[in-house]
Each structure stands twice: as C-alpha cells, then as structure tokens.
Length: 479
Image 1 (cartoon, rainbow, N blue to C red):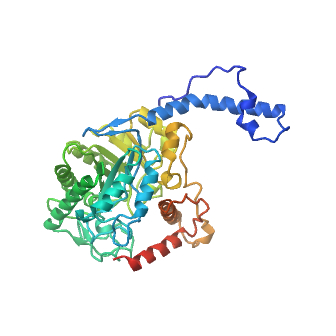
Image 2 (cartoon, rainbow, N blue to C red):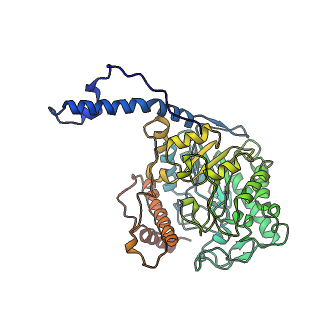
Image 3 (cartoon, rainbow, N blue to C red):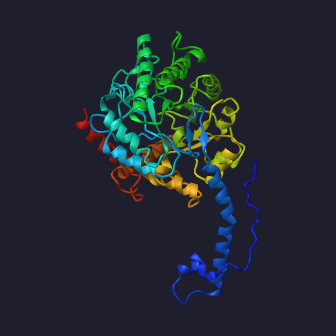
C-alpha cells in the first residue's frame, strides 16, 4: 500500500506560545510552564498534520472528466437518499428545493437525487417524487436550479421498485416472476410476472423520465439497478425465474438493464451523463453475487455509461447500511480501508473490468482512506450519503481541510438491547439498529428541509415510531 506519511517538518523556536489556541482558551494568569509544553505539543501535531491535510484536500479536489465530456469539479458525491419529501400529490416540494440548495452549498462535486419513480402505480414510500409526464416542469426546474446553486452537477436518479412496492400501494406489483422469495413477510403482496409489453413499457418510462430530467435542467441521470428494486430483481436468480429472453442466463437477466441504458442514451443524447447504480452483490444466498456483478460490469462497458456506482444489498439485507447478512464474507480490501468502506474489497474485483469511471458508496468516513482509494486508482469518485444528513457541509470541510473525517453513526447511535425482546438474535438486532438509524436520518433530513440544523439529541429509540407517525399522517392526505 502506498504511504501517505508527510515528510518530517523542520521545527524552530519561531513558534509563538502567544498564538496557541490552547492558551487563548485559558483564564488569565493560569498559563503555566506545563501549559506552554502542552501548547507546543498541540501546535507541533497540527504542523505535522498540515501537509497531509493539504495533500488529502488536493486529491479530493481534483476534477474528473467523464466519457460524455462533462466534468465533475471534485471527487466527492452525495449518493442518492430516499428523502420522502414530495408533496401530497408526489410532486416536487419547496422542502426538497431547500434541502438540495443546502447540499449544493455543502461542497460536493455531484449530488444525486433520491429515487424518482417512473410509474405512479409502483412506489417505494410516501413522499416519493413520481415523474411520468412533463406536466410539472416549473417545479422540476426549481428543484434542478436549487441543486445546482453552487455550480455542482445535479443528477436525477430514476427507479422502478418492482416487487419492493409495499402492499399499501399495490397488492400485486410488477416483478420478473410471481415470487416473494427473499422479501420480508407481510410487507409486500404477491407480485405479478411481467409480460413482454410490461417490460417494454418500463424501458420506455425510464427513457421518458430521463428525457424530462434533461429538459428540466438536471445535469445527468442515474438508473437505479441496485438494492433489490426492479432492475436488481431481474438480475437476481432469486427473484427472476423466467425462461424467456429476460431470464435464465445472466446475459438474459441483464437485458432489462442494458436495454434501459440504450433507450435512455437515445432519449438524452451523447453529451449527457448517464450513471448506473449496481449491486456488488445482493448478500442473499442464491441471489446476485460478485461473479455476476463483475460480468455485468463487463457488459456495461459497451453501453456508453459515464459513471458506475457500486453499492450492495436490498431491503432484506441492508449491506448499504453496514448490517449483517447471510451471505459469505465479502472479498477483503488489501488496506485498512476495508474497516470502514463496505465495498472496497469488491472494488478491487470490479476495477480491472470496468471501462468507465467508478464510484463506491458506503462507509467512507476518513479523508485518508478516501485519498488512498483515489491515489491508488481503485476508484474515481467517493460517494457518501448519511454523513450529509447530519453535516450538510461536510464535503466542503473535507476539501478545505477543516475536517479529516465525516460524522460516524454506527458507533454512536445504538439501541439499548435491554429494551428489545430477549429472544432477538444478533442478526435481528443488527437489522433493528439499521432500521432505527435509517428512520433517525429521515427525520434529520426533514429538519434540514425545513431550514433547521440537524438535532443530534433526537432519541434513536423513538425514531421508528416518530417516522411511522409522520408516514401515517402523510398516508391520510396523499392522493
């Protein structure tokens, strides 16, 4: 592994004790010799770290030219977050505009929206934006402008949830096959296997929504092919039991993804960025695995996409949240990055195959590890989501050296196991913590969207109930 240790600086007696931040915090008359020694050590550590901070900021701040000709101004991206902040008719709200304006001024070179639904009959949750026609262009343009207030890129993520449409929205949603294998019980209805016409219609919807996103002023589009949603379902042999041109072999299971990308490119033109979000694996036995993922990346090489984002997991296995799964352990990254970046090991498998820029999202917190991934050419972009929910300006802080790490949540936000059923096993407890953290983050997003700052004092234990109350309230007034 390449070393990032700075050269040892020269130390001289020019260091002025009077300038010490330690001294300035002490009451008058209390600045003793021991305080002077402590001040010297503080300033010495700060001076040693300064070259390293500068180098990290330089690497994170480098621009990235995409194959289509677009340029991202730095290597930090806000990955998609499911905000749930649309109005009661599933249109863009003022809250969404306020949230993304705040994020735009937060320093990231790229912002990606939460998933925009291409079919109003298939929703992921209350508060999704649904975009089927250009009827609401004025509101979309306001959103696009807000998300580019600081001249960053702002891409719309488009999605169809397929069988991960909750039963309250659709009791028999589309899916590759009529199977609930791998889904949590009671939350989802028995899906209906899609016909050829259904599949063609979904591809058309992806292309149409992408074209509207360009017309509205978004600077790119991302097709969601991960986390167990429709495209991910077609890719997974656990969900796709078809024996026609859309199932069976991996080439057939990848057909929906590839045909959708082709249709989107035809709709938006050659100079518009297209990204795909792809699972490294589903983390479910019998599902889409790393070997499948590597092969699909190879298939995408000739499709003309501009950025591939790697994530993982689905609603039953929240690998994107860092929770446990029943899948064998992930390939290990050869550096300490593996301790925090969930998919760094998979990146090492995918990087040699990928013919397009690569972005990894999930677990990155320390600027040193982000820099290592970039300098060693293991990725091209660093994706983050949760840190921006608690510090909207964290990207700017990492870029200018005010911060060397992003906020962590998994260590700080933990449920009291004693308040949960005694028979809860470790896997179920980890899942419960992940869901509670997700609800807590949704509530923080709502605060930012209202113009407030995040509230770290918000109890984790009540987050699920509070978000449930809000969702029920929305359900009572949504059309």
